[in-house]
Length: 175
Figure 1 (cartoon, rainbow, N blue to C red):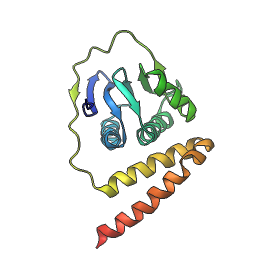
Figure 2 (cartoon, rainbow, N blue to C red):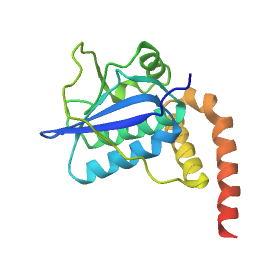
Figure 3 (spheres, rainbow, N blue to C red):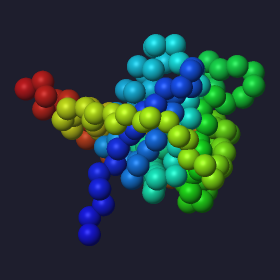
Figure 4 (cartoon, rainbow, N blue to C red):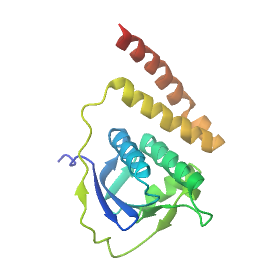
C-alpha cells in the first residue's frame, strides 16, 4: 500500500496563518512551503501555526527549510519569542528538532482539539528543475549546519555532494 502524496493545507484567521502538513514533509514539499511562507510574509503576516497532527515525518531538507523560516521569523519577530508555532508534532519530529539544535526557533504546543479552520489545499508548484531542487536542498542543509556546529559534521558530506551536483547541473543548463 503506497502513501498518499504529502500536501499543504492553508487557512488564515485574523492575522494568524495556519498551515496543516499532511503526510511526509520532504524535499519535494519544502520548496512549496518556502514559497508559501515568503509570499505570506510579503503580504504582512507574521504569526504562523503549523498543525502537524497528520505529518508523519520531516526529512533533513524540510527541517532545514523550516529552520530557515523559523530563523527569519525569530529575527523579525517580537521580543515575546518565536512566532512560528508547531502544534502537535509527533514524538519523533520533536526529538529530531531537539537533536538538530533548532527546537528553540519554535513554540511547540499540544492540543487534543484540532484547529477547526476551513483549510484550502495549496496547489503544488509546476515541475521544478533538478537544479532548483538541488539548490533548495543545499541551502536547507547549510542552514542546519550554520545553526548548530554538530550539524556540520552530520551534513558536510551531503552538502559537499549537493554543491558539486549543483555546479554540474548549472553547467548543463547553460549549454
